[in-house]
Structures are given as structure tokens and as C-alpha cells.
Image (tube, rainbow, N blue to C red; front, side, top):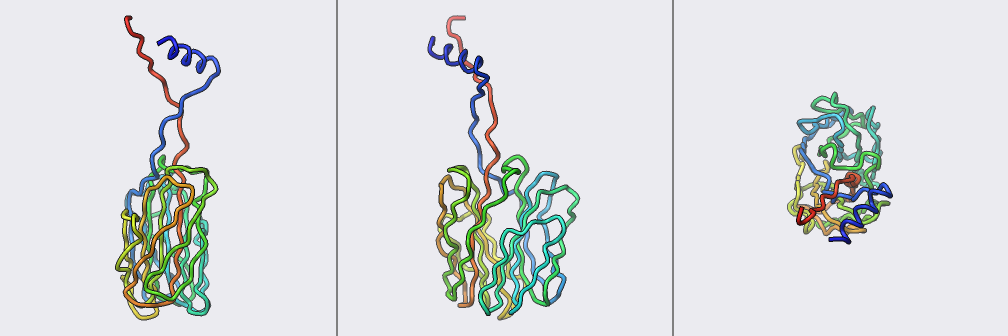
Length: 245
């Protein structure tokens, strides 16, 4: 009892606040859609957007000379093109203002596309730290795999999102343990159009190494991993029971 009182007194004297446990960034909503060949791609955004939410969207398209203009107000995370095959996977993010509307327009070369978007709830992620993104993996297989990712932050309650393009066929299976928000965006078909797959998981590790996706057809795939840092820990109040009083 005396030890607890001493600890509390020392913390108050030093101005130290205890740290509360931190939860994982929370995916509140997702959306997906496809576009027939066009130079103005429409990406449908998740519902319920509020100021302070983290918005992310990924778009996969096919063109030998891919060109994507970053939409106003958004920041590019990764734009990867699979060699001369023209399979392109680009990912963008922004902190929502609440006035985004139901979709965002993306200017590209003339191409068909599929897209996925996510909304991560305000207060569950660290808005001062940009999402981390890993190197892309290019392959021609039915089991593409995103490379491992080690974010700049220390071990934390990180939200991980793995994504892949699967040209010529839908995503039929997702990396082991990536059981959250499994999405196959195959609205726009066709042999050349990359289907887009993604799945998420919560994990407290320094480095995340996802398993393989499964595509229903062999093609020139692109895969990579995104990590989102949880909200900074907050100070709390210690309540110490005083027995006998």
C-alpha cells in the first residue's frame, strides 16, 4: 500500500502521466468499383466520411505507358508498373475534410480499371505519420505475394493492408491471417484489365510478412503492403484505492 502511494506521489511530483493502451486503427467502411476504358476514372469512396478520417484508395489499370495524375488534395503512396506488361497499381491517401463527396475522379491514360477504397476512423490512427508502404513485387504467377514491410515506427498495434492486381482473373484466396475486409474488385472484366484484391489484418510486430494471394489466372501481377500507425497513446489517471478509509 505504501509503495503505491509513494509511486503516485512521485509521478504527480514529476508531472508524469501513465500511458493508456493503444488499439488498432479501425477500418470503418470500404468500397470498390470498376471503369470501362476511359481517361477519367471514377473511384467510389466509402460511406460515412467525416473530417479527420483517413481515406485510402488503390486503383489498378492496364496500359503499356501508364500515366496517373494525383487527384487534388491526395498524396501518392505508391505507383507501380509491372515491366512492359502494363499492369499498374497506384495507391493514394488523404485526411478527410468531410466534403469529399461520394467519389473522386482520377485522370489517367485511356484504360479500364478496378478500384478499392478504405475509410479508417478518426482518432484510431496517428494523423501525424503517413502510412508506410513496401516495395512492389512483380511476378507472373497465380500466387503473388507482397514483400515484407518494416515501418519507421517501433513495434505497435499496426493495421496492415495487402493488395494485388490479378490480370485475367479474379482473386480467389487471400494471405493467411489477413482475414479483415477481404475484397475482390472485379467489376470491370477483360483479359487485360487487372482485377484488384486486398485484405487487412491487425498485428503487433516490427516487420509484417504477408502470405500469398491466389489469382484464378496467371498474369503479370503487382503486389505490395501498406501499414497504418495507431493513434498516439494518451495520458490517463491512476485511481489508487486507499484501504481502511
